Amino acid sequence: MKIATFNVNNINKRMPNLLAWLKSSKPDVVCLQELKAAQSEFPDGPLRKAGYSAEWVGQKTWNGVAILARKSEIVVTRRKLPGDANDEQSRYIEAAVDGVLIACVYAPNGNPQPGPKFDYKLAWLKRLNTQAGKLLKSGAPAVIAGDFNVVPTPFDIYPTKSWDKDALVQPEARAAFAKFLKKGWTDALREQHPGEPMYTFWSYWRNRYERDAGLRIDHLLLSPALRPRLEKAGVDRAVRAKSDPSDHAPAWVVLK
Image 1 (spheres, one colour):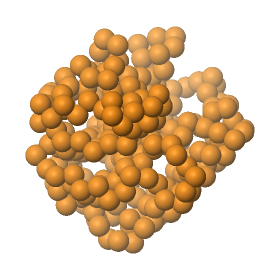
Image 2 (cartoon, rainbow, N blue to C red):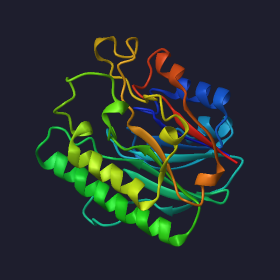
Image 3 (cartoon, rainbow, N blue to C red):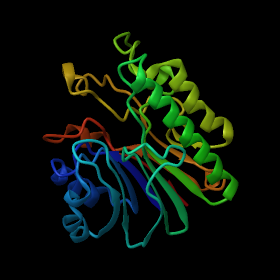
Image 4 (tube, one colour):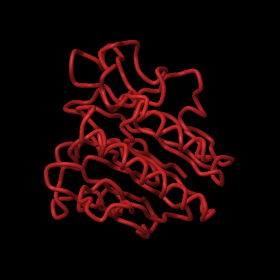
């Protein structure tokens, strides 16, 4: 079972690249983030033609998350992250697919920091941690996949000081991510590639992709029930080099 996550940065604009990647990579389940499309604007028709069913939570202009599945039913369990009834941002969808519970997440960026946007980011990650605890308690095989907007350690970013004040690398954000691992979740990319940075994001600015000046902010966390099934993990880096690309590349795991 191959499970991938991909921040597409506007699904309608990136459809040619998305469809080409789906055809070449053939993931069984895909978590998409930053759809930048209202609920009615989601392009489920082309995805169905490509062999993928979809469930999504859209939002006009910003945010938006989706789960795609190939040859499997998607049974949605949640369309919103619990813990804040006033939060209207589309950043979470959860579903059962082929015996695995999949949580697709798009965490807040948090910039500028300090400030209300960073406070919202930390509060959102705290709510996600609470929900992650409930998933662990259920005992179900589970994956939390998506754009966490957190660079876990200095090893997960190219050597630079230009990001030092960015919300993605702040100690509070890193501590929030570390709590998932302390609870028993496995960072699949780092588990499989302990000695490689495995960047998933390269800014459009200053030829950062060409210079491999990247960040690892897209993650796949596996519950203890799935860790023994982890066979492979990787990043489809070449997708970032396509014409008019997202600034992210897909990351994936293969489970036995």
